[in-house]
Amino acid sequence: MKKLMLLSITLFALAQLLNAQSQRPKKNYLDLNAGMGMLPTFVKDAGKVKTPPLSLTADYQVVEHFSIGAYAGFSVTETDARALRDGSTAQWSNRFSIFGLRLAARSSQMGPWNVYGGLSAGYSISKIDMMQGDIEKVKSEKNIRAVSGKMLMTGFLGGRYSLTPKAGIFGELGYGVSLATVGLSIRI
Picture (cartoon, rainbow, N blue to C red):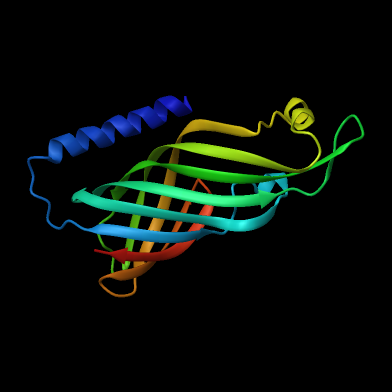
């Protein structure tokens, strides 16, 4: 059901883009955003943040109220020593990277505010570095591999507050390198 809904929204957004190609956009711009995560993706694992979740996005308005963009993110978390079933312990760090494309629908400017939401499709990579213990034991017990990657399709909701016509701050909710991100935005 979730995948069907995401697919429907994606197809609707693409249909809007194709339909709007004959219309001349009122104003094109590129938003470059640099953010830091406030709620790391691996918060449920009770890991210590070694490198805070950092993200970069670039969103280009192709037609009024619609943008297409790219994103990338990176974080490093570290576990405490964990007891395994056989009595041994293990401790590891996780280098998590994510990158992909995103489509967003944007509201009209409401004073200094612009609200947006959309879908992103990308690829995530986790690289586990063992600090203590055996990766094979961790793999069999916790289903964690030394290197793993997977395709992701997620949604996001955000807002941008304009400090000046070219600079602003933004906040965003959605799955990625962090579940909640805030940062600076430059409009070109």
